[in-house]
Length: 180
Image (cartoon, rainbow, N blue to C red; front, side, top):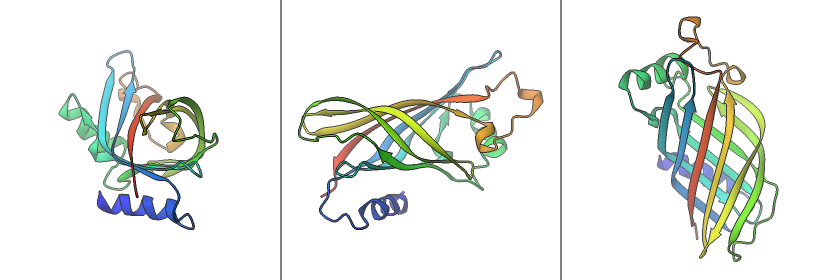
């Protein structure tokens, strides 16, 4: 976990000394799949994120094996059969928020982040909407978006096609601390 934080901090801080870096070491990422036979839900609170409010640079990194499911068997199949977490241990987003946010001004700001989403070893250019909330100097980011399994070469066997949707709804929530 510490290694992931260092890598993200290094990526965002290159040639940006003295700028406003914010770090979240326990971002919450949930996934939801609605299917005719059974809904699938999982949550991880182990994602690491770094946000440079001055430049808009934003990075997220989540260990795939950190997702917790209601049923142990779902978690086992998720890691071994679909996500192959031993081969592809992390998912990440590295991009930039287009809108400039004033950290000194409380408010909720709709934002658009454009960058690279890497899941299952496959990187896709994505534009993801979300919101930045500033309240009493605390910065939070939330987002909800869809990820198609096929876009990241995640194969769903026909035998379980009715159990797993072709797209997953992803929710992201991160509360940041200043990294001085």
